[in-house]
Length: 565
Image (cartoon, rainbow, N blue to C red; front, side):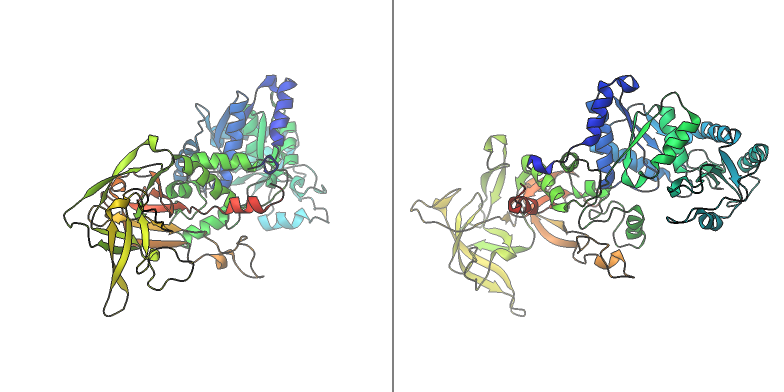
């Protein structure tokens, strides 16, 4: 990838300047602050790599902090999955695992402080009324009739809210800022609301919970975060972030910076939409290999190193844009090309019998795992009378540019011999070809023919007696449109779901080296793509292989055609 395609990391520049100026005593403390209400996806990976990477590069630290302020949607399952995903990506928070719920008592005290300063009040408007009073982008809001409550009354009501005297929705605590502010976020935002639900960590201790915008900035301040990095959707909220920090005036003042979130073609990254895909059973769960979740990518076989490289390449921008998913696939291929063992499997088997090869003979060929680097090792490959080749590698009446096997045509079998088709056997009822009969030239083992004759195709194969059956799952984009939300008015993103996003092949045939492969192990099936042993559905002696990515690299094609590269 050319330098022109690598955006400047403007946040890194800001941190370099801060360190050079001695800000925060030269310290760099970042955080990754997920809400435990869903699984992480590839967009979160960008933030994880950014926050942990910057802390690492500047000799600082990065906290993992769960913003667990909404017990209605949070679950321990999500907490555990998020920790697993961050570790899988290659990052560690050490002793700095935190929760917003660690600070509930302190946050309550800060809220009381705001009430005493006259900067917050208890409002008894309903949620709908608060929305109506807020105004619009062109019209100012209207002050709540409860805005002039006395400090004493507000303190009393807030304490009684904590004590559980009121039902949900009866009261909220709001900041007293400016109902005429051009930034709607500053029109007396809600700081606390009543939620009578069991919290995954604090149980029923609390029945009022801070809003994200109140808890987040103060948690940053409590932990001494120096650079609070978030996506552009929080840009307007920065004014509220700063207002709360100004009111509390902590010893160390964190600063918020925004960057553009990741948007990928043929992908949705909205948590709400991902939840719908799972709940409506368009996919088989959060770890379905078609999902952009980190658990789905991991199960598919995508290496974490490839994701980190992808995040480095796309860099950071100040405004939203869309990244072609072909670049992610390119990064996956690039890593697997260097690390995945080359082996052979046949996805749609067609039997090939070599008439002049003895029935009881097994010839062990030596096949390198990396043909271009044979010094890195090899495996024995049994060659027998009966083999399987791909159904697509034979045509009885081939078109002009079909160079693979056909009647009276000779091809090379990978690492083995030249074979010539001398006949076929068909199903008498359907007419489908079931067996190809060939002869082989024993003088052509592992290379060319002594007489110099050439063949135009080399086919992969597997011994019918020494190979084993396996299930192979071929995955494609989950959506048919580059922008799944690009639907007609009144339409829905699910209308662009790809019915061919998953194809299951139950009768694939794999070479012996693949039979005992470990869950998660990755290979290149020669001529077919990169595959991984499924960690969930594989059984002893009956592995399931997921295709990670094809061999065809669309990004390289795009890059070569672009005048900017």
